[in-house]
Length: 77
Ligand SMILES: [Zn+2]
Ligand SMILES: [Zn+2]
Image 1 (cartoon, rainbow, N blue to C red):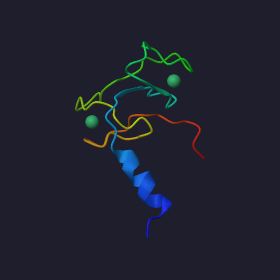
Image 2: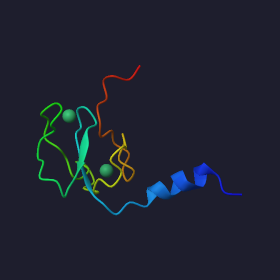
Image 3: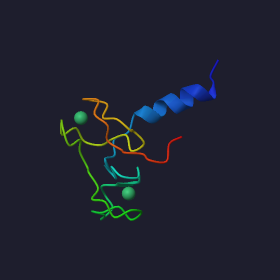
Image 4: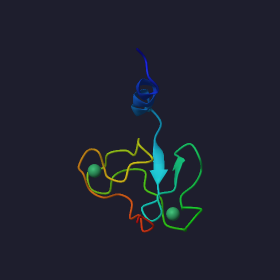
């Protein structure tokens, strides 16, 4: 029996790469010509600063390859 959970799991297969703002968590596709975050002005990263793994999960808070914190989210409870 298929559930909506199965659909969500397929979201993991993402070929696109993203630039991620380490300050506020904003992101954009690398196909967009953005170098700096349009929300807070921080320089966007397109790879993990430690292991150089490309950013393929734009909503990730931690690097899935090496586990370092990528996004300093300050508005968490
Ligand atoms: Zn930002
Ligand atoms: Zn990493």
